[in-house]
Length: 407
Image 1 (cartoon, rainbow, N blue to C red):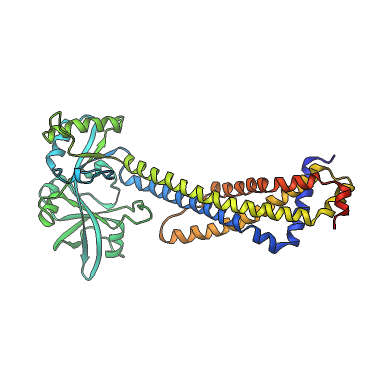
Image 2: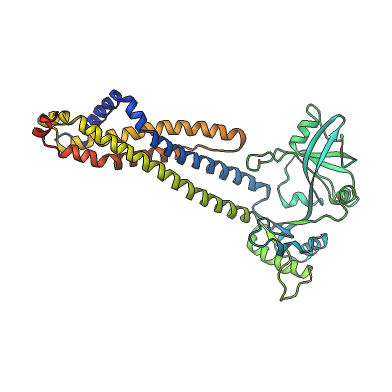
């Protein structure tokens, strides 16, 4: 009896020859497989891209950062229970700084959107944050040039600003911006520093950005803004411990008694991570269902065409058996043929998925990994084996004399 590798090699040769003789039929048979592979590959491509972009985006918040806010970042349930909460003010930041244990840095933060102009050049829709000089200590500030504003400048409400990379590129394309002036909110600001490029957020640039002193923000934009307090945990102290400490301290600062519910929320990056994970699971569920449906249709098509192939080649099977081919050899031949049909569909499906990923990357984010490609071809092999086993077994069990008589 020939060795198994020899039988497999012979099966591949015969199956490839048979498929080449019926190229059009083979390609049409793979359409269901192609649709299934495109579905599963595109799903994983988008999810991998979103997950990678999300993980890069989390560095904007910092692994050890917490935010004391009026409401949760992700509101689930009745929004009306949050609408009457009083805003967070700077007193909360002062109390946290004085009483909370395990805290390395505290900074009140306000935010908004404005236009920044220099001469005739203007950048519209720039997101800015206003805070104290302690803001860099809470993380997420990486200077490219110049400096951050000082505590004295912040307390005095000086019109100074630190600009993001996109704003610098648009307003100062070929010169050093440090010491130059720009206009925001109808006032003139002096540029004291610039920021290094920051990670994108879900494929969108975060460098159209600026930071200015909180007292300056109050004077120029809003006297009574709603604030968030950013807190960074000290080295060696877990974020959970700091969060527990913050709850007690902020409750005291807000004058809540033991029977009253919290009128604030403590947010951290885990909230966003859990939210994205829930979306990921739901996407997987829908994608797997659609993929399974497509592959089932493709598998039925492959099974049907393999039955036809066995019927058409009955005399060939009889000749092989008469010349000494074993049941195993015939079984392997048709199993290999079914797998090759599915692999052809896999190659086409992965190629289409690569084009889809390229197109998505032009407007969003997608990542076609080697693992995803391996998964696609693995599914093709499994579908081919399942689809071909019954027709192959039928061919293997045929009797040589009856097969040779078949017309």
